[in-house]
Length: 106
DNA sequence: CTTCTGACA
DNA sequence: TGTCAGGA
Image (cartoon, rainbow, N blue to C red):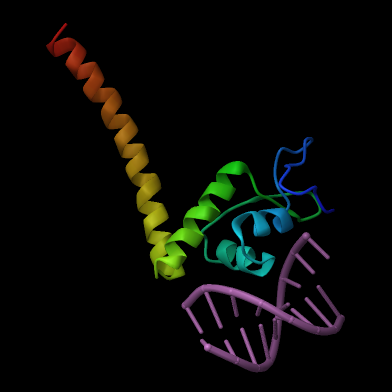
């Protein structure tokens, strides 16, 4: 089930674990370890194969970057959680504030 | 491709 | 603790 280098499967639009691994620059075993730690949650095929989307690849890149900076998996979990949480808060807040600004200064 | 297990810095 | 290697 090997996919061509760097190219996502056209039918599924996602990467196999092997291409995701050397795309990020690590082994497949580590990616499973990251999933076990809850750092990434790739979808699964009917056969049980992991399907890494482009968003998952970006997430994996952030993980390795944070890993190089000396954080452990627990720390990275907090960072990514806070990052998602803050993103939600920011988007809702900017929507409200723009709505507020329009009413304050028409 | 999957899971599990053991070993190393 | 995270990473890597081998085998089912």
